[in-house]
Length: 174
View 1 (cartoon, rainbow, N blue to C red):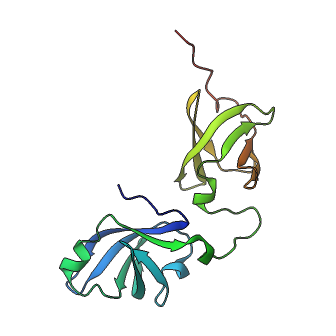
View 2: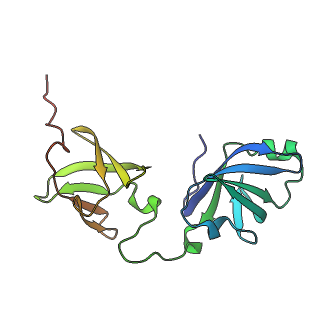
């Protein structure tokens, strides 16, 4: 699987070629449609490209990228990330975070005990869910105000309220 270069953020993952003129089907990894709108630049496969056209349909975006003019060229990009430099992202309102900012945060309970690190963010119908890996195994933490008490990016830390049934018992050593 392709890695996102340091200092960049993935804004989409390219799927199959679509049509014969070089369009690609993209799974967006951002909530803002403007980021994948015509005129914006993205880097894919190490090359900077301009989004010439975009069409959204059922959560998927179909893009035409500059320099990709036929199905064969589009097919070579399958499974590649569309990335942008972190510095080009728009600042978010207080209390909102980009996914890349959350991955790797240390998660602690209100008493200060470490529960592990955020390894993934899952999108569900109601709210996001943070996947935390630690000594107790995998913990699925709902991203709600009831559970998430603090996120401090400077300290690299998230504090959660332990809700009954959320945290498994510590694993016993054999």
